[in-house]
Image 1 (tube, helix red, strand yellow):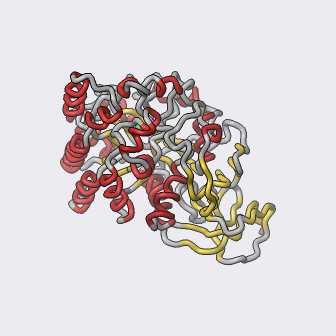
Image 2 (spheres, helix red, strand yellow):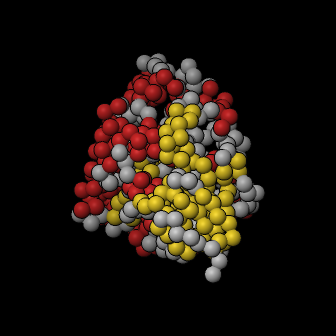
Image 3 (cartoon, protein in one colour):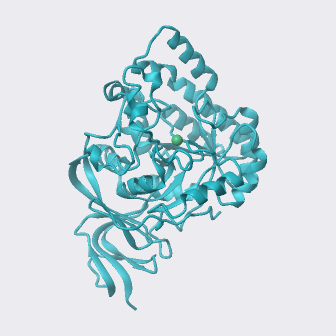
Length: 453
Ligand SMILES: [Zn+2]
């Protein structure tokens, strides 16, 4: 029988292994992986000439700001940036859009607004805020892949949670078979330190970092993990920046607590000296950390102690960054990163620190699909999985220019950096959506996904 597509002559990478071969695709699904240069009858053959063939990247944490703030990014621009970054599925957060997705009605409103806009597949987070525990079941029924809660103020119209709602949300996550993802920083200590530092008149970049120290993150990590243990709920800690938090999670996992941890490319690529130099484009929360902490985080990644790496892509109009040039408190906190994430990990991880491609695939594709209930439809090259493939030239050296960005606003902390490793082609369900700097499909090609289990 003739296949639809044969992607051949590459380095096929799975979670377990990497080998020279190809991928056979029919009806948008993987049929089989073949070793070597085996001949396969197919309508279309793509010879990737030794480049790496990865399962498509599954980014479990992006903000595309739609509806209500689509002038910040929006699904068209955001999904194109994702495709150019090798991301075949993104999971979009409930906040930084208005209204935030905190009940069924608002989620449906969002889905209507973003329909027919994305060029890759996507799923939605629901929101966990101070007063919506009764809404979680409805959000779950709509297929949200997790519930996002902030333990510190989010800075937007999305109320933070205290321990009562964290506790209640975790109980619901156990009952529903879903996940609570938390932004873990101590509200009280970060607020106290910010007030104390601001009272001295400081507006420099380090003032931001000093107001949100590692200890304030670790306290929230440990508190969330504690309540996950008590409730038997499913906890995911987003954008972990510190090894101590990951060690606390590892210890809890051994004791049977359902906790997973995510980190982001910017916490692995940049340190706080970079933040001082780059300025507002590199402002985020938690902030970029000291070099020693960055290297400790890398040790955790290389040891397999981190579960997922996600971009936390959180763009804004350039003016909202520029206004913080001289007063860091005024800048929007969030990094435009979905397009640079994979190249950053190839450069700093695979090439510089010996991160294996199989572990990279586990962190950026298989694990996020598993944790958020999309596996093995997504995150896998198993027969029957969606034929989502990211083709990477591992050795290509290139420098990211602002005009390369598909994001609506052409600023990013990664602009001007030279990467080793480039996404050359992104395939979603057997169709090329991105190739050599061009988007190849119309907005709306991307499908909405629901949590499978
Ligand atoms: Zn985020």
